Structures are given as C-alpha cells and as structure tokens.
Length: 206
Image (cartoon, rainbow, N blue to C red; front, side, top):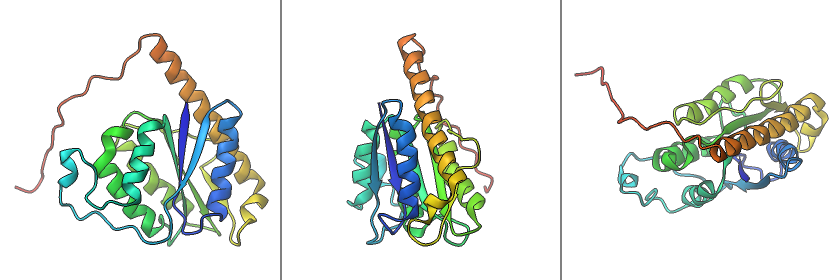
C-alpha cells in the first residue's frame, strides 16, 4: 500500500515538508510506502472551466497537476499539506487542487485523505476547513489525529519545536495506516464500494 503526500508550500524543504515527513514516519512504521510530491514554486494556473477534462484525458494545462494525477492513481491514500496564507491555503495549492479534483476526482473517490496545515500563529483552522472541503465533496473518508492536523513554526525548522504538533502528525500517519489496513481487510472479505447513483443536480436559479 502507498500514500501520496503533497507538499503545497512554495518552499520545498520548509516547515510544511517537516510536518509531512513526520506523517510519513507514522505510516512507515506500519509498512506503508510513502512519496512526498512537491508542487513547485513556478506558479500553477487556475481552472479556466473549459470542460475539456470531461473527455477523460486530463487537464488541458499539461503541467504538475497531470503528473500528480498519475501518482494519485497508484496511491491508496492522500495527504495534502499547506502553509497558511491569510487564513487560507497557498494560492498555488488552491489552483492545483481545484484542477486536480475537477479533472481527476474519479481517481480519488473513496480513498482515505487528510489535510495538514502549518502556520506561524493563526488561521490554521480556516485553512484546514478549506482543505477538508475537497475531500468531503469527493467521497473520501477523512483521517483524523488526536488534535486538529496542524503544526506551528515560522523560520525553517521551527516546526520541529512544536512537540505536540509533531506528535499529532505521527498519530495521523498511524491512523491512516490503520484505516488502509481496515479497507484492505474489507476488500479481502468481499466488501465492495457503494453502488454509484446517477448524480442529481438542482439549480436554484431558473
């Protein structure tokens, strides 16, 4: 089994990465393979609503989103990490997730997911709520820890000083590993995914 961890920070080896590495530690304790994927800092285009992805060939912008989608196909679980910018996710990660879920949501459905956020001080709960909305609209079971999935730090490396935050990350990894094993056991016992209903859409403006 494998979990893909996405680093949505513009800094490849900053505090968000430290938090993700700690989650990976908890996963690896239970034999779960991990990969941390950095979205980069060159800018990620937002969704233009062209609808071309409905053809099943991915997003028309051939960039990091399509690369990540291929990795998501191979992964059994997903964890997304972000710094907190004005009580929200980083701009590039927001564009990245908008396009990933719009064009490849079918690949991610029913896979366990968790978001983690890193801040100097505040705005963490709002950013975490924003992250969770991507998962819950896409039928992805949320994985929790013993506290909200957040860690604090400003200068690179300070996240390691947040001992409670680091513990939260490790417990999150272990909980993800436990849920993945439960799902694996369920499949072995013949439990299948819920039957998919035709999607009903109700528009409130006529």
